[in-house]
Image 1 (cartoon, one colour):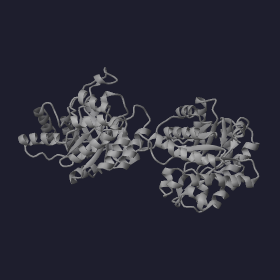
Image 2 (tube, helix red, strand yellow):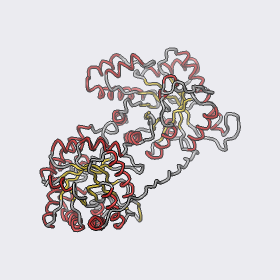
Image 3 (cartoon, one colour):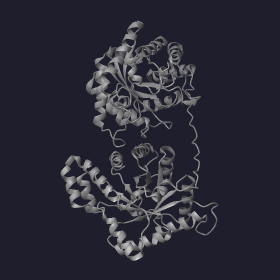
Image 4 (spheres, one colour):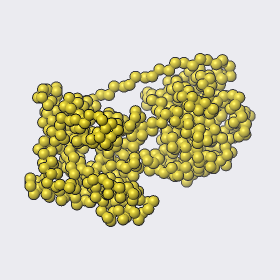
Length: 614
């Protein structure tokens, strides 16, 4: 059967079935139910859907095991039934095929785990592979003809699924991924990169499913085939982008439309075509009719949708960060760097993980280390609009003249950004463009004054009206362990007089550094009453700790902490989490919040720290 399947792909385009979830819902099964469990508790409804697709002309039916992995089943308390549910799915499909007296292949379906993998989640790659292996073994032993890995958005997750299939089965492997509206994966990988990686991983058939409608998938198919011209391809589009009407999810693409695209997919090189979300036996029947009888057609032209406009946020209330600090609520802020290119998918995934873990604010750095990156205020807007978490914009004065400073402030405010952190910024001499202009018209305290006594009062630097006041909540930098305490206190006093609302510090590893500086300030100037959010940079290894301690000015890591992480060996990251949690707990006695700075994109480590201290 295995050889027959692969050999058949060389001579014809096979027609797969359509959506299972859409059809189960149409048969009265609620979306809150575990569809995979129906293989055990209501097999007749699953069997009826298989039968309808076979009668419509499908040559390949996919088992009802899309979510039958330990992570998704755990949400229904069924994590111990992985093997049973997967075996039942295959056996049920095979009984339907036998009763049809037709030559139909049964594909064991493997969907996404429903959890994020490191570094954007907690699940390690080896744990993901083990979860996929459970499904692979059960589906193979039950008699599936091939394995279909589908609808995964993370390239690394798909690669782990393929590896699990190759290690635990000799069945052919079909691997397809899903894409966003801008033709890249959720984490920003292009069709070209995905085609290369899936082919290199050993999948027998690669391609696209779910995503948008046929038009988008035809476009992506052509790009993937150009990247891997010798590969076999599968295409299974949704019935267009879903719409909600009268409480129901509706898909606009009808069966005739799918019939036309079956031919276009075939002409573009697909050896398996079918349908995904929103498709029905009627869609498959029209595709069958087209494949059997219609001649090849010319490809259609591709058009792109215009960008949507972004509305400005209201400015008449304090930010959530301002409210939390005023209430004395300990706040967790996390720093993220803008991407080096156009894709923001990985950054968005990291921001989503951090927000879900309990981060109160995402701080976006501006050209850290003077390296070219996307403008920070654009990233702040995306984080707020797409993730729903408040952001703080790092706003360096270096490299900005008065015109640029004020124009960027207006732009940030128009995009709904209210928290800003004023800083000098890194000199261009250390970055990608050392010859770039490094001039500036304002020092940080001067910019704080411009915002608090100018823009927030409704006037610009020259005193001219800007129409209405801004409502920026302004932070400034503070070094808790300076080499020159008197100089630092003098700068601190200048920033307070300029109107700074809060202070953000460099990373510390000794919780008593703050009280010492505050005590020294109060001895000269009286009560210090501004919130301080203290920098916390989690350690990941002994080498990392030694580098920071010996080579980064202003960072002092106690000998005890370095000894603990040294003794931990390969578990240094775990000790890094423990040290950060202990530090934050000690900071709560005097600080207003912690400012976590992920190292090496280890958002999973920071997420763990947040959950511990929350």
